Length: 349
Image 1 (cartoon, rainbow, N blue to C red):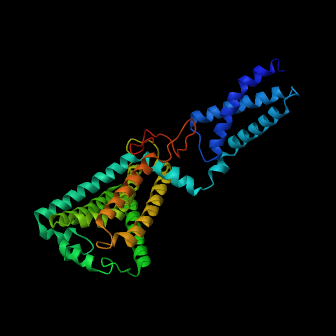
Image 2 (cartoon, rainbow, N blue to C red):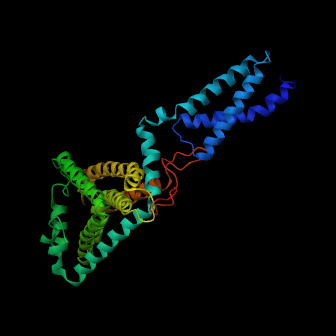
Protein backbone atom coordinates (compact mmCIF):
# COMPACT_ATOMS: atom_id res chain seq x y z
CA UNK A 1 0.00 0.00 0.00
CA UNK A 2 1.27 3.47 -0.94
CA UNK A 3 1.40 5.84 2.02
CA UNK A 4 2.77 8.87 0.16
CA UNK A 5 1.66 8.93 -3.50
CA UNK A 6 3.55 12.12 -4.41
CA UNK A 7 6.81 10.73 -3.09
CA UNK A 8 6.16 7.41 -4.84
CA UNK A 9 5.67 9.16 -8.21
CA UNK A 10 8.62 11.49 -7.68
CA UNK A 11 11.02 8.65 -6.88
CA UNK A 12 9.70 6.24 -9.51
CA UNK A 13 9.40 8.48 -12.55
CA UNK A 14 13.18 8.86 -13.26
CA UNK A 15 13.54 5.08 -13.36
CA UNK A 16 10.50 4.71 -15.63
CA UNK A 17 11.89 7.36 -17.95
CA UNK A 18 15.26 5.62 -18.09
CA UNK A 19 13.57 2.31 -18.88
CA UNK A 20 11.53 3.97 -21.63
CA UNK A 21 14.65 5.51 -23.18
CA UNK A 22 16.50 2.18 -23.24
CA UNK A 23 13.49 0.45 -24.77
CA UNK A 24 13.25 3.15 -27.42
CA UNK A 25 16.86 2.64 -28.45
CA UNK A 26 16.44 -1.13 -28.45
CA UNK A 27 13.35 -0.90 -30.62
CA UNK A 28 15.27 1.25 -33.12
CA UNK A 29 17.89 -1.46 -33.60
CA UNK A 30 20.26 -1.33 -30.63
CA UNK A 31 21.70 -4.34 -28.76
CA UNK A 32 22.48 -4.38 -25.05
CA UNK A 33 25.91 -5.07 -23.67
CA UNK A 34 26.13 -7.06 -20.42
CA UNK A 35 25.90 -4.03 -18.12
CA UNK A 36 22.99 -2.65 -20.13
CA UNK A 37 21.14 -5.98 -19.96
CA UNK A 38 21.50 -6.09 -16.20
CA UNK A 39 20.27 -2.51 -15.95
CA UNK A 40 17.28 -3.29 -18.16
CA UNK A 41 16.35 -6.30 -16.03
CA UNK A 42 16.61 -4.27 -12.81
CA UNK A 43 14.48 -1.44 -14.22
CA UNK A 44 11.94 -3.95 -15.49
CA UNK A 45 11.64 -5.59 -12.06
CA UNK A 46 11.31 -2.22 -10.36
CA UNK A 47 8.62 -1.03 -12.81
CA UNK A 48 6.73 -4.31 -12.30
CA UNK A 49 6.84 -3.88 -8.53
CA UNK A 50 5.72 -0.23 -8.87
CA UNK A 51 2.81 -1.33 -11.04
CA UNK A 52 1.68 -3.81 -8.39
CA UNK A 53 1.89 -1.17 -5.67
CA UNK A 54 0.06 1.38 -7.81
CA UNK A 55 -2.74 -1.12 -8.43
CA UNK A 56 -3.84 -0.59 -4.83
CA UNK A 57 -4.36 3.12 -5.46
CA UNK A 58 -7.41 3.75 -7.62
CA UNK A 59 -6.93 7.50 -8.21
CA UNK A 60 -4.01 7.17 -10.72
CA UNK A 61 -5.46 5.32 -13.77
CA UNK A 62 -3.27 7.17 -16.31
CA UNK A 63 -0.04 6.34 -14.48
CA UNK A 64 -1.17 2.73 -14.11
CA UNK A 65 -1.86 2.43 -17.87
CA UNK A 66 1.53 4.00 -18.61
CA UNK A 67 3.31 1.49 -16.37
CA UNK A 68 1.34 -1.42 -17.81
CA UNK A 69 2.46 -0.47 -21.33
CA UNK A 70 6.05 0.10 -20.18
CA UNK A 71 6.26 -3.26 -18.40
CA UNK A 72 4.73 -5.02 -21.42
CA UNK A 73 7.34 -3.47 -23.75
CA UNK A 74 10.17 -4.46 -21.41
CA UNK A 75 8.82 -8.00 -21.13
CA UNK A 76 8.68 -8.26 -24.91
CA UNK A 77 12.26 -7.07 -25.33
CA UNK A 78 13.59 -9.43 -22.66
CA UNK A 79 11.77 -12.53 -23.88
CA UNK A 80 11.75 -11.90 -27.64
CA UNK A 81 15.43 -11.18 -28.26
CA UNK A 82 16.01 -14.22 -30.47
CA UNK A 83 13.16 -13.39 -32.84
CA UNK A 84 14.24 -9.76 -33.08
CA UNK A 85 17.89 -10.49 -33.86
CA UNK A 86 16.99 -12.77 -36.76
CA UNK A 87 15.59 -9.93 -38.83
CA UNK A 88 18.02 -8.48 -41.35
CA UNK A 89 17.92 -4.70 -41.53
CA UNK A 90 19.98 -3.37 -44.45
CA UNK A 91 20.29 0.17 -43.10
CA UNK A 92 21.34 -1.07 -39.68
CA UNK A 93 23.86 -3.40 -41.34
CA UNK A 94 25.39 -0.57 -43.37
CA UNK A 95 25.42 1.96 -40.54
CA UNK A 96 26.54 -0.30 -37.72
CA UNK A 97 27.32 -3.97 -38.43
CA UNK A 98 29.86 -3.53 -41.22
CA UNK A 99 31.93 -0.66 -39.76
CA UNK A 100 31.93 -2.26 -36.32
CA UNK A 101 33.14 -5.58 -37.77
CA UNK A 102 35.88 -3.64 -39.55
CA UNK A 103 37.01 -1.95 -36.33
CA UNK A 104 36.96 -5.18 -34.32
CA UNK A 105 39.70 -6.49 -36.63
CA UNK A 106 41.51 -3.22 -37.27
CA UNK A 107 44.93 -4.78 -36.59
CA UNK A 108 44.38 -7.21 -39.47
CA UNK A 109 43.52 -4.29 -41.76
CA UNK A 110 46.73 -2.45 -40.89
CA UNK A 111 48.70 -5.62 -41.52
CA UNK A 112 46.94 -5.98 -44.89
CA UNK A 113 47.89 -2.39 -45.70
CA UNK A 114 51.51 -2.91 -44.61
CA UNK A 115 51.88 -5.99 -46.85
CA UNK A 116 50.44 -4.11 -49.82
CA UNK A 117 52.70 -1.10 -49.21
CA UNK A 118 55.70 -3.42 -49.01
CA UNK A 119 54.72 -4.87 -52.38
CA UNK A 120 54.25 -1.37 -53.83
CA UNK A 121 57.71 -0.32 -52.64
CA UNK A 122 59.20 -3.44 -54.18
CA UNK A 123 57.48 -2.79 -57.51
CA UNK A 124 58.42 0.89 -57.51
CA UNK A 125 62.08 0.26 -56.69
CA UNK A 126 62.26 -2.48 -59.32
CA UNK A 127 60.95 -0.06 -61.95
CA UNK A 128 63.46 2.64 -60.99
CA UNK A 129 66.45 0.30 -60.79
CA UNK A 130 65.57 -1.90 -63.78
CA UNK A 131 63.10 -0.31 -66.24
CA UNK A 132 62.92 -3.59 -68.19
CA UNK A 133 61.31 -5.23 -65.15
CA UNK A 134 58.07 -3.50 -66.23
CA UNK A 135 57.36 -6.48 -68.48
CA UNK A 136 57.15 -8.64 -65.36
CA UNK A 137 55.75 -6.32 -62.70
CA UNK A 138 53.11 -4.36 -64.63
CA UNK A 139 49.73 -6.00 -65.18
CA UNK A 140 46.95 -5.17 -67.65
CA UNK A 141 49.28 -4.33 -70.56
CA UNK A 142 50.76 -1.21 -69.00
CA UNK A 143 54.24 -2.34 -70.05
CA UNK A 144 53.37 -1.98 -73.73
CA UNK A 145 53.31 1.84 -73.81
CA UNK A 146 55.23 4.61 -72.13
CA UNK A 147 52.99 6.63 -69.83
CA UNK A 148 53.30 9.78 -71.97
CA UNK A 149 52.14 7.84 -75.02
CA UNK A 150 49.15 6.47 -73.20
CA UNK A 151 48.23 9.92 -71.89
CA UNK A 152 48.23 11.30 -75.42
CA UNK A 153 46.03 8.47 -76.60
CA UNK A 154 43.60 8.86 -73.70
CA UNK A 155 43.26 12.62 -74.07
CA UNK A 156 42.63 12.26 -77.80
CA UNK A 157 40.15 9.40 -77.38
CA UNK A 158 36.36 9.96 -77.64
CA UNK A 159 36.24 10.35 -73.87
CA UNK A 160 39.04 12.90 -73.84
CA UNK A 161 37.50 14.72 -76.78
CA UNK A 162 34.18 15.06 -75.04
CA UNK A 163 32.20 12.40 -76.89
CA UNK A 164 30.16 10.01 -74.83
CA UNK A 165 31.44 6.48 -75.23
CA UNK A 166 29.31 3.37 -75.52
CA UNK A 167 29.30 0.31 -73.31
CA UNK A 168 29.67 2.01 -69.94
CA UNK A 169 27.32 -0.52 -68.35
CA UNK A 170 29.18 -3.47 -69.84
CA UNK A 171 32.57 -2.10 -68.79
CA UNK A 172 31.28 -1.33 -65.31
CA UNK A 173 29.90 -4.87 -64.96
CA UNK A 174 33.23 -6.34 -66.07
CA UNK A 175 35.13 -4.24 -63.51
CA UNK A 176 32.77 -5.16 -60.69
CA UNK A 177 32.86 -8.89 -61.44
CA UNK A 178 36.64 -8.98 -61.93
CA UNK A 179 37.46 -6.99 -58.79
CA UNK A 180 34.96 -8.97 -56.73
CA UNK A 181 36.48 -12.23 -57.96
CA UNK A 182 39.97 -11.06 -56.98
CA UNK A 183 38.74 -9.91 -53.56
CA UNK A 184 36.93 -13.17 -52.82
CA UNK A 185 40.05 -15.07 -53.88
CA UNK A 186 42.18 -12.91 -51.58
CA UNK A 187 39.84 -13.63 -48.69
CA UNK A 188 39.48 -17.35 -49.50
CA UNK A 189 43.25 -17.83 -49.57
CA UNK A 190 43.10 -17.23 -45.84
CA UNK A 191 42.33 -20.97 -45.77
CA UNK A 192 46.05 -21.49 -46.49
CA UNK A 193 46.68 -20.23 -42.96
CA UNK A 194 46.91 -16.71 -44.37
CA UNK A 195 49.91 -17.40 -46.61
CA UNK A 196 47.94 -17.12 -49.85
CA UNK A 197 46.32 -13.89 -48.71
CA UNK A 198 49.74 -12.40 -47.94
CA UNK A 199 51.03 -13.40 -51.38
CA UNK A 200 48.01 -11.88 -53.14
CA UNK A 201 48.29 -8.61 -51.23
CA UNK A 202 52.02 -8.35 -51.94
CA UNK A 203 51.49 -9.19 -55.62
CA UNK A 204 48.75 -6.56 -56.00
CA UNK A 205 51.03 -4.03 -54.34
CA UNK A 206 53.84 -4.77 -56.81
CA UNK A 207 51.62 -3.87 -59.78
CA UNK A 208 50.38 -0.66 -58.20
CA UNK A 209 53.88 0.44 -57.18
CA UNK A 210 55.42 -0.36 -60.56
CA UNK A 211 52.76 1.57 -62.49
CA UNK A 212 52.92 4.54 -60.11
CA UNK A 213 56.73 4.75 -60.38
CA UNK A 214 56.56 4.48 -64.17
CA UNK A 215 54.11 7.38 -64.49
CA UNK A 216 55.98 9.54 -62.01
CA UNK A 217 59.32 8.98 -63.73
CA UNK A 218 57.72 9.98 -67.03
CA UNK A 219 56.28 13.18 -65.55
CA UNK A 220 52.67 12.00 -65.69
CA UNK A 221 51.85 12.09 -61.99
CA UNK A 222 48.94 14.52 -62.47
CA UNK A 223 47.29 12.26 -65.03
CA UNK A 224 47.88 9.23 -62.79
CA UNK A 225 46.22 10.92 -59.79
CA UNK A 226 43.26 12.08 -61.86
CA UNK A 227 42.86 8.63 -63.37
CA UNK A 228 43.27 6.51 -60.22
CA UNK A 229 41.84 8.55 -57.34
CA UNK A 230 38.12 8.70 -58.29
CA UNK A 231 37.72 4.92 -58.09
CA UNK A 232 40.97 3.83 -56.43
CA UNK A 233 40.22 5.53 -53.12
CA UNK A 234 37.36 3.05 -52.72
CA UNK A 235 38.61 0.09 -54.75
CA UNK A 236 42.00 -0.23 -53.06
CA UNK A 237 40.59 -0.05 -49.49
CA UNK A 238 38.01 -2.68 -50.52
CA UNK A 239 40.77 -5.06 -51.59
CA UNK A 240 42.63 -4.31 -48.36
CA UNK A 241 39.49 -5.22 -46.39
CA UNK A 242 39.29 -8.49 -48.36
CA UNK A 243 42.87 -9.11 -47.25
CA UNK A 244 41.84 -8.22 -43.71
CA UNK A 245 39.13 -10.90 -43.82
CA UNK A 246 41.63 -13.44 -45.18
CA UNK A 247 44.11 -12.68 -42.41
CA UNK A 248 41.40 -13.04 -39.75
CA UNK A 249 40.46 -16.39 -41.26
CA UNK A 250 44.10 -17.52 -41.38
CA UNK A 251 44.65 -16.52 -37.77
CA UNK A 252 41.59 -18.49 -36.68
CA UNK A 253 42.95 -21.57 -38.45
CA UNK A 254 46.33 -21.19 -36.76
CA UNK A 255 44.65 -20.81 -33.37
CA UNK A 256 47.73 -19.32 -31.78
CA UNK A 257 47.03 -18.36 -28.17
CA UNK A 258 43.48 -19.69 -28.38
CA UNK A 259 42.32 -22.78 -26.53
CA UNK A 260 39.10 -23.20 -28.48
CA UNK A 261 38.83 -26.12 -30.95
CA UNK A 262 39.04 -25.29 -34.65
CA UNK A 263 35.26 -25.45 -35.13
CA UNK A 264 34.74 -23.02 -32.26
CA UNK A 265 37.33 -20.58 -33.61
CA UNK A 266 35.75 -20.62 -37.06
CA UNK A 267 32.24 -20.13 -35.67
CA UNK A 268 33.49 -17.16 -33.67
CA UNK A 269 34.96 -15.28 -36.64
CA UNK A 270 32.59 -16.46 -39.40
CA UNK A 271 29.98 -13.67 -38.98
CA UNK A 272 32.63 -10.96 -39.19
CA UNK A 273 34.38 -12.54 -42.18
CA UNK A 274 31.07 -12.76 -44.07
CA UNK A 275 30.23 -9.17 -43.09
CA UNK A 276 33.61 -7.89 -44.28
CA UNK A 277 33.48 -9.59 -47.68
CA UNK A 278 29.88 -8.45 -48.20
CA UNK A 279 30.98 -4.89 -47.48
CA UNK A 280 33.83 -5.33 -49.95
CA UNK A 281 31.34 -6.35 -52.64
CA UNK A 282 29.25 -3.22 -52.06
CA UNK A 283 32.30 -0.97 -52.17
CA UNK A 284 33.46 -2.58 -55.41
CA UNK A 285 30.07 -2.06 -57.04
CA UNK A 286 30.40 1.64 -56.31
CA UNK A 287 34.05 1.75 -57.45
CA UNK A 288 33.20 -0.02 -60.71
CA UNK A 289 30.48 2.49 -61.52
CA UNK A 290 32.77 5.44 -60.76
CA UNK A 291 35.63 3.96 -62.80
CA UNK A 292 33.43 3.42 -65.83
CA UNK A 293 31.46 6.66 -65.75
CA UNK A 294 34.01 9.11 -64.30
CA UNK A 295 37.61 7.88 -64.15
CA UNK A 296 37.78 7.21 -67.89
CA UNK A 297 37.07 10.86 -68.78
CA UNK A 298 40.16 13.03 -69.03
CA UNK A 299 41.08 16.58 -69.92
CA UNK A 300 39.89 18.60 -71.72
CA UNK A 301 36.47 17.09 -70.89
CA UNK A 302 36.99 16.78 -67.14
CA UNK A 303 39.78 18.70 -65.38
CA UNK A 304 42.16 16.52 -63.44
CA UNK A 305 41.86 18.85 -60.44
CA UNK A 306 38.13 18.05 -60.21
CA UNK A 307 38.76 14.30 -60.37
CA UNK A 308 41.53 14.51 -57.77
CA UNK A 309 39.36 16.56 -55.40
CA UNK A 310 36.52 14.06 -55.85
CA UNK A 311 38.82 11.16 -55.00
CA UNK A 312 40.19 12.87 -51.90
CA UNK A 313 36.64 13.63 -50.72
CA UNK A 314 35.71 9.97 -51.22
CA UNK A 315 38.70 8.80 -49.18
CA UNK A 316 37.85 11.18 -46.33
CA UNK A 317 34.21 10.07 -46.34
CA UNK A 318 35.11 6.37 -46.37
CA UNK A 319 37.66 6.82 -43.58
CA UNK A 320 35.16 8.68 -41.41
CA UNK A 321 32.51 6.03 -42.10
CA UNK A 322 34.73 3.11 -41.12
CA UNK A 323 36.17 4.90 -38.10
CA UNK A 324 33.06 6.50 -36.63
CA UNK A 325 29.85 4.94 -37.94
CA UNK A 326 27.99 2.77 -35.45
CA UNK A 327 29.82 3.82 -32.32
CA UNK A 328 27.70 3.21 -29.24
CA UNK A 329 26.20 5.97 -27.13
CA UNK A 330 25.19 5.32 -23.58
CA UNK A 331 24.26 1.91 -22.12
CA UNK A 332 23.02 0.47 -25.41
CA UNK A 333 25.79 -1.08 -27.45
CA UNK A 334 25.11 -2.16 -31.02
CA UNK A 335 28.27 -4.21 -31.24
CA UNK A 336 27.69 -7.55 -32.93
CA UNK A 337 30.36 -9.17 -30.83
CA UNK A 338 32.33 -8.63 -27.67
CA UNK A 339 35.91 -8.26 -26.64
CA UNK A 340 37.94 -11.38 -27.24
CA UNK A 341 41.35 -11.43 -25.59
CA UNK A 342 42.24 -14.58 -27.54
CA UNK A 343 42.09 -12.72 -30.88
CA UNK A 344 44.83 -10.10 -31.36
CA UNK A 345 43.21 -9.11 -34.67
CA UNK A 346 40.06 -8.12 -32.80
CA UNK A 347 39.63 -4.72 -31.22
CA UNK A 348 36.89 -2.91 -29.42
CA UNK A 349 35.40 -0.16 -31.67
